[in-house]
Image (tube, rainbow, N blue to C red; front, side, top):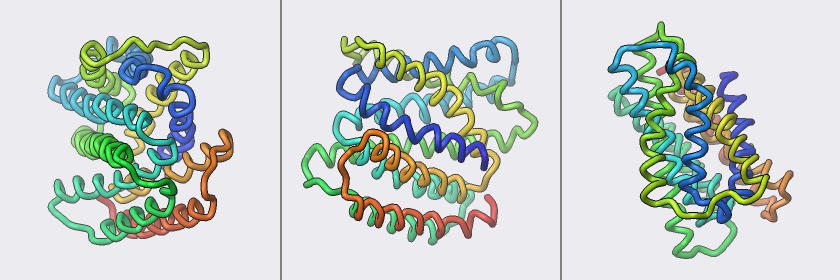
Length: 283
């Protein structure tokens, strides 16, 4: 649980950093590529030193390609269509995807998670204060693509590592970034533009996001996912939302309807409470 809490605090700042310093200023495909390669650089000494069975390596690479590579492609595009607050709000569906995927693999169904997801949707409607537009719906769909990739990666990693309990995850995790790089590199070559970083703050933010938020963050989050139940993992995906919104409002002083924000956060908190009870049962 400590891993998930620590990464939640770390990632709460990432939303705003991307929205303030990178979105619309740096090509999103280059931003994705730089984050992935910096994270890979951080773990590359461990890749060269330790060896694992081929099937395990390929599994972790595939997870990295989806959870980080594909997810980032959706994620960065969403900031071109939506505000930071909207991107945060629309991530509320990730817990639903996590529980559905986990329950599908476990051949069971948990109705409480559906109730929690519906309450979270209401929270999003309350916190969404601007008029609806075509761009809004496109942005919503893009965020859901990111959510699905992130959820699938977490559930898959949790299941794969459950079958290899003796593996030291820090020795293996570099292959996660290799998989992500296999998506990020061709995406940048084919779809990338020429909007490269031009200011010191651009490079500083990319370094922070690549080495810390991506490198240490994804390792900590996925390791934490293997130590908690699927219910608690879903809960912690929602806990990031109010944390990120709070950072966006307090540090960057973005205008928002504080009453709606407060009510929405309370409703999200209630959905988290609903998810805690089945989390105690494990799984």
